[in-house]
Image (cartoon, rainbow over all chains, first blue to last red; front, side, top):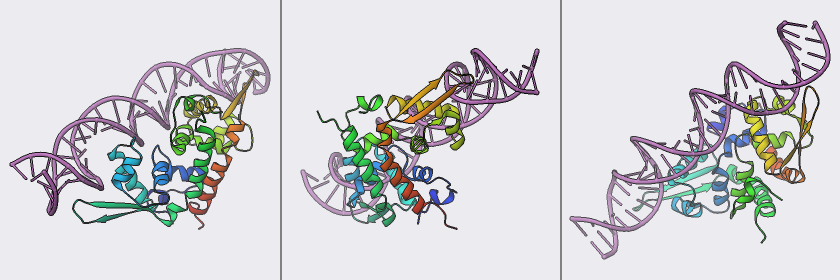
Length: 111
Length: 111
DNA sequence: GTAACAAGTAACCTTTTGGTAACTGGAAAT
DNA sequence: ATTTCCAGTTACCAAAAGGTTACTTGTTAC
């Protein structure tokens, strides 16, 4: 079940609710990046170079609070942290797949 | 084909491109509202009361510039303006349907 | 003669979001 | 003795997004 920020809201519209959870400039891309694999912080950062590390850390924290992904910290030196989608996060895959499909068909320049 | 703001960008990631088009707090809800019917400005405003009329007008203008909907103005008094999805706008329906479905299953409180 | 109608716009302000640069930690390699 | 590794955090600043209130327009109803 959804936790964190989303839980507090009494949502009447399912689309509004979704946007409160995964709206914003970066969250769908982060989820898309984690879709099939767990990844380290630096790995996500390298795959989405346009996002600053500060904002990436913020967004990951919110996604974790909302129950969409888990953060696992290994107490090694240098540190290692892995992010992985929860079952709830994975349940977003159909949405992300439709987004990917639409983008492929309508936005990629076939030149 | 996509026009306006989205056309200028060289998009490498389909999900990033989609977000540039329909990202933001309101656009998916507006598109969802117009999904199956043409609607007047006041009608959209009434169905999405949380959005201010100023922001609604701005978002509708951007969606029109991006080729997702059409604006038809009837020169009557009082004025009448109708908004309707284009074919491109309608092609977003699978995305919006997945969003609606996910929201229904995960956000609506069954209490 | 004034108010209401629809669909906005203009001026102004607040909130949210995002960016940069510098810094932290302890162990390891140079 | 200094630099590198990684995953951040902190302080600070700029830009974007969004909100509020008042105003417009021309015709019709009170």
